[in-house]
Image 1 (tube, rainbow, N blue to C red):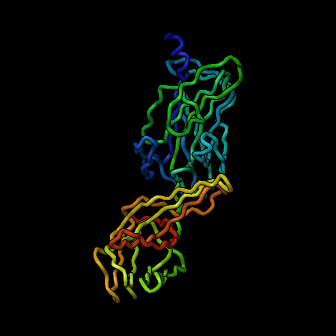
Image 2 (cartoon, rainbow, N blue to C red; image 1 turned 45 degrees about the vertical axis):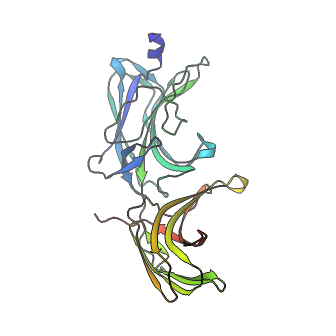
Image 3 (tube, rainbow, N blue to C red; image 1 turned 120 degrees about the horizontal axis):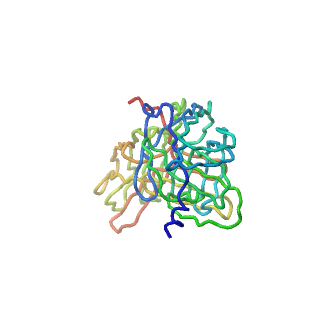
Length: 341
């Protein structure tokens, strides 16, 4: 039994590090189990430089048919779990076929990498970037060590299947087909892209209501907001003939995945902000001042590779004394600016 358990252990450890890892900014990366790890942060068009270290376990010899590193940008939909759509794929060959007897270091560099989309982990979709090191060797099954990239890498002691991408661990049993399959190590990093403030940012102004009962006018100072912005506006009551008891402003995120009959839409209410408590009167004006920084927002994503979209809405909700709800929803655009601190 001990022999069989030992047969499942990877024959070597694989480590990936970035050349500027000590100075590069780290950001939180939330995993499916709720835990948060720190991941290296990159932008579009950056050079990704580092080294791969392969270390045979207990001085054992590792025969291989070559070593390579891949930089992959991937989209995965929850309803098609395990199948990745690669929108970025770069490869660097690190070593020719041979044998490893001791620790060996391989430098790598990907220059001016196109990373057009930000990393995103949503309700039904995930967009991620990974570095994948593959040691090609004669073996009977895929043997995969799957980890997030963090500054201090924790070595996995189990054998994991690469297609099991949602941070779960699955022990793989060997087969008898004798096919050639690789030993791999995959590490994640975060990508954020920054947008300058828009040259045109029109205000939002609308009149809504119920005929002969309620007539209000709401105004927001602009229609495009950065992730740390402040929503400023006003609500004017032009006609009030129903008894209202409160009013609140919601921030909603709508995530759409798939297409046609396979389209899935998930709407999340990220924030609720009470604007008024009590009955308003005609001519009254209610100010709006909502800070966005406390909330976990992302930029707006519009039809990313025909796979998914993420949109944001301001939802104005009025509730009368009989708990009937009246609401008006308005789309806004979110973008990320470069943080100065």
